[in-house]
Image (cartoon, rainbow, N blue to C red; front, side, top):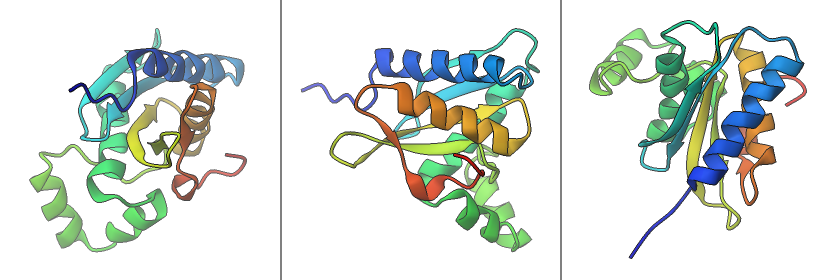
Amino acid sequence: MTVVGITSNQAATIIDTTLAYGSEQELEPLAVVVLDAGGHLVAARRADGAGFMRIDVARAKAYARLAMGLSTPELMARTESPAFWGALTALADGRMIAFPGGVRILDEQGHIAGAVGVSGDVSDKDEQAAVAGVRAADGLNPLEEDLVASGS
């Protein structure tokens, strides 16, 4: 049996649209990572000129949403306890960041299919680019509770 949450075509649409949105909005060069529901990499791309750690940051934004099952505001509230957040980050081998720019993705049945993470500009703009990418992919939608940026 084959299980597919986010197809490679959907991931390509998310990435292409996110990067195009960033270009159109004159954002700093972006990196985009798409993860499946288990936190595994589906696809990633870094725009020309994006910093070499942007993929890592984008992945950490997406991974945190999936690993904890929490929205960005809820994750950010958890960072107010340095001991808790430090332990959690250590358990995740440093793969989690609680900033806007990571959005969980829903399939047509409303189940979590994965997440997208974007890094390159300020976090709210990263999030807006991520949302544009998800909304362009057939059969997928952003999880609205994850959205904190104005205009998302």
